[in-house]
Every structure is written in C-alpha cells, then in structure tokens.
Amino acid sequence: MVRASLAALLLVLALAAPAPAGAEGILDSLGCIARTVYWEARDQPFDGQLGVAFVVLNRMRASGKTACAVVDERGSFLAIAQHGHAPGHDARAWGLAQEAALIAWQEPDADPTGAATYFHRLDVRPAWAQSLTFTRRIGRHLFFRARTAAEAAPSPSTRPAASAGKEK
View 1 (cartoon, one colour):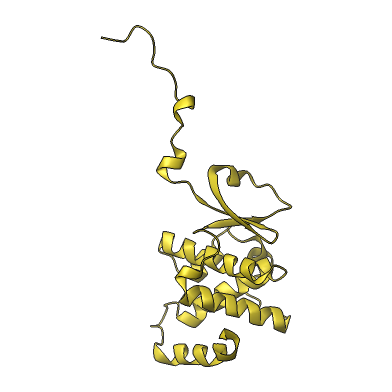
View 2: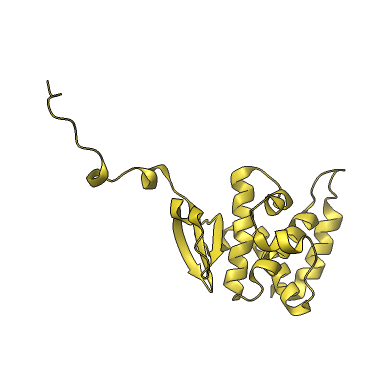
C-alpha cells in the first residue's frame, strides 16, 4: 500500500514545490515528524506511531508553527531533546516512522488520537496531564488534548452557592 509508493511520493513532493530560501519544505517537515515518531514511539504499535505523528501535526495546526519548530520547542519531546535530529538507525523502524509521518500528513481524517496535542508513556505521571482531556490510550502511550471551555467550566455541583441575603 503506502510503503511501496513512499519513495516515489517523496520524490514527487520534493520536485513539485521547492521551498523558498529559509522556509521549511515538505521533506523537512516529514523528516522532523518521522524522527519524532522514531525516537518517541518506534517500540509502539503502528497506530501509536501514527498517533505521535498526529500530535506533531495537531500542535502545528493549533500553533501556526512549522513541524520542525513544534518538534524543537524546548520541553516538548524528551526523546528529541536527547537524540536531536539524528535519523533512526533501525531501518525497519525508520521506514515505519516515515510511513506514519506521510500518512498523517496526507490523511487528516486518519487521526487515531481524537485530536490529541500531547501524549506520555504509561510509566510516567506528568503534572501537566491533569489539566488536559484524555482522548485515548494506544499501546503504552496516553493521548490528551486541551480542554474545551465547556470541559473547563465547573459543574453546577462545584460552583459556589449564592450568598444569603443578596436576594431582591
């Protein structure tokens, strides 16, 4: 399916629209997404790898930043902070990471995360996760998105009661 045409499609994309000087091109974006998938999720099922790719894209859409700017943002992706932009050295895992990046880029409706913009492994409990809405567990990752205004509003049972004596 996608694997067979990945190299051909990347070549067509590269030749079709070269990026202006100083701009991030499609190949740069796909490379940053693939490296994030590789270093963060190469040991996860393919849906989990696809989920990590969508987290990058969902953050990109929400922030207006490029994929590489999202990936390089300080504190965003621990594995990228540790490994930088080194490509994967496991050829099979690197190919799957590239495939996940390409599918996420081309098929926005394929997002398995429920529009998640954050994720973490099951073995950690980051404080930031408490302020977000859980969307899905895939493999050993939990995915989250920002709360909507309705989700952030206190429920009627937790709102302070009207103070006595203020009725007219």
